[in-house]
Image (cartoon, rainbow over the protein chains, first blue to last red):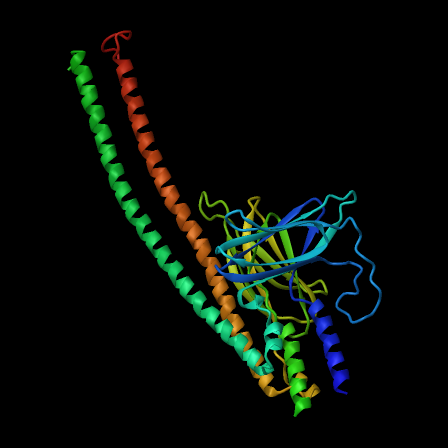
Length: 221
Length: 211
C-alpha cells in the first residue's frame, strides 16, 4: 500500500516536473533571439532549455510513443555577462542546461541561434531560467536531513523574505545614487548656463572691440 | 499518523512543483514578440508586470509605448494594455492551457521590454473537500507564499523602473553637456563669421561708404 503510494507520487512528480512553468518562445530558422536577465552578485543561477517537440502529446498523461525531433532542429546557445565573458556555449544541440555562480552583478544575456533550414521552420524553445532563491535545489535539502515538509516550506518562505529585505536595501541604494546624479546634473546645468551667458557677453564684447579697432584703422571712425 | 504525514509530504511536494515562479526577463521587441506560459488550473491568478526601457532617447519620449495582448488557449483576448511604457497586470485565468503574451511595437525603433509573469494557485475549499489529506494549513501557507510573491513582483517592477529612469537621467546629463558645448562653439563660429563679413564689406576691393 505504502509502496503503491510512493510509486504513484513519483509518477505524478515526474509528469509534473515535465510541465515546468517556463518561458516558451518561437524561434524562426536562421534568426536569433536573446533573453536577458538582471542577476545580483554572488547568486546561483540555473537555466534549462529544450526544443519543444511539436508531436509531443502535450500536457496530457497519455502514453503514446513520441517521434524524435527532426535532426535539422538544432540551436546554438551562448550565455554572456554584461562585461562580455561567456559563461556557457553549446553548439548544435537540441536541449541542455547551464548553472553558474554569477560573480558580477548585471545583465546576463542568453542568445539562441537557430540553424538555417531550407523550408524555413519555426521551432518552439522552452527556456527555464531561475536565479537566487528560486534556483536553490530544495530536494537536496530535504534528502540531506529528515526535515519535515512543513519546515522546508517555512525555510523557503524565510529565504524569500531575506531576499526581499536585501532587494529593498539595493533599491534604496540605487535611489540614493539617482538622487545624487540628478543633483549633479542640476548644478551642472546651472553652472553651464551661467558660463554660456559669460561666453555670449565676452564674444559680443570681443566683436565690438575688434570692429571698433578695425574701423579706426580704416580711419572711418 | 505515518500515513497522514506521508500524504502531507506528498502533497506539499506537489505544491512545490506547482508554485514555481518565473524570473524577470528582458527581451528586445522589434515588431511583435510573443512568450508562452502554461496555466495548470482554471481560476489561477496570472499576475505580472512589464517595463519598457527605451533604446534611443534622443528627441524625448514621444514613443507611443508598447501594447501587450494576452490570448487564452481558446484564441480570444483575455487582457490588453495599450500604449504604455510599463504597467502591472493581474487577472484570473478563465481556463487552463497555454496562454500567449504578446508585445507589439508600432515604431520602427527596437525597444527592450523587461517582463515578469507569475501564475499562482491557491487550493480552495473544492480541493480541500476532494482530498481529505489536504490540511487547511496548506491553504494558509499557499496564501502566504502568494503574498510574498506579489511583494517580490512589485520589487522587480520597481527595479526595472529604476533602471529606466537611470537611463533617462544619464541621457539627459550627456545631452546637457553636449548641447551646451555645441552652443558655445556655434556662438563663436557665428560671431567669427559676422566679423569676417563686416570686414569684407569694408575692405579695399569694395568702394568706401558704398555700404
